[in-house]
Length: 310
Length: 216
Image (cartoon, rainbow over all chains, first blue to last red; front, top):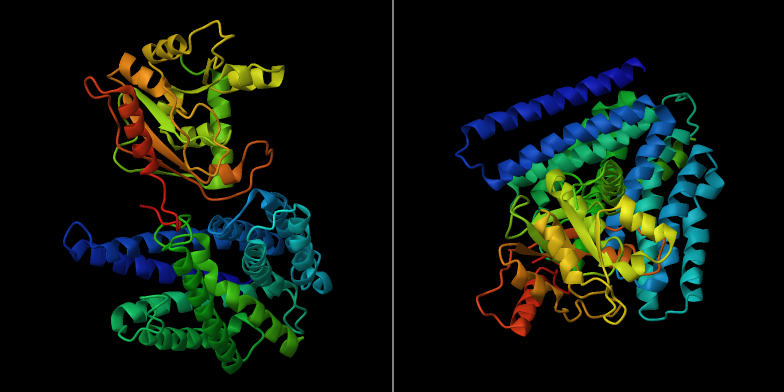
């Protein structure tokens, strides 16, 4: 592992340690039993330790580790998504195919670095094959609704998310062997933006961005979170082939996309009458509750970097 | 009947790992705790995975003394099914066919309870293949409650398993499942059979999530 990787890792451990310390002091001074906000904060920080450990272990195994990690994230996200959709018996083979064929094939194509196919495998081939398979089964009840829900699920949970590990395959001149750090940059800024939006929102949040969709998204949280996360992105330029200014602009873009990802995910949850996607990550909800911003940020970030730097 | 064999303990552990990997199953204890006296867990039934899900949600000690009541006519048909039901899993097999049966199902189940086994029981008597959330209850639950009034009857609503592994399917679709354990029921003094069965059915249905998917 390079010095930069070590720096990043130690930095993360330092940030989490400070967060744990602050939360411990707050919990110690707060009246018992702990208010639910503080309880949730403690759970969230604990989950962050586990997630950072998981991502670090994947990074130790390099490209293969990160691809496997995100194949698993896709699996968990798709499972949460499909649970909330209307499925009928006739959808069985399509659904099984999504889990057993589409996820492994998409991530294998990234492993062998076949850009020409992994960028169209789902939006072209699966897009056409899945409704064909469903139609062959003959059940037309709510056909369009079922087919659309499947398309959305596979695009969000598999196609979009797979662009995170795909970053490692980008042949950026002068960045050879540092693809993993680009992934670390994207994850750190987007997730950092989520955390900072949460903190700014809790501290200063007054005016809701979309009261019909999410009570917790405020303009104060949004602007404060994205501005500070972009600054943090600029400060992390040494992980990337970008200049500090470029890093800041790309970070801002990723964070704005991330915000929209969270907003869309909230709209889907509101439509289905649930608060969280699942219960996989203590304090956060499901995998999609944590990955929704990455879903929207990753493909856009990937294609801008691919267009401008390769 | 004695405790679980080594093979049964091992296969229960393997199945629990598999069930968690596919369904991420989580128990919701709404009205009772995981530890209690001898129990009959009565649940909705639409999939072979149902009792595996209930077992997976139980604590290890309780899992070790819990057996599922299953139809002998189905599970004794063919050597593979016989091996699964008889050796691999902890089951209490009862003969459902009135005409041909040689052993009274009540005797078999009461013997298991008397040997200190908790039971997983599907009061609908068969897997529900209709659009209805729950079929009419057969008399078995009432007979058990009347014969062993000290045993707790715990309603368990199994969510989504029928979508994961419907009847006739071999490969499960990964979907999130939950098992909601409700407050235990007891047969009131002199309570009529039909009244009791209706009450038990309503108690189980009350644990189901509402139509729009939100839990209660």
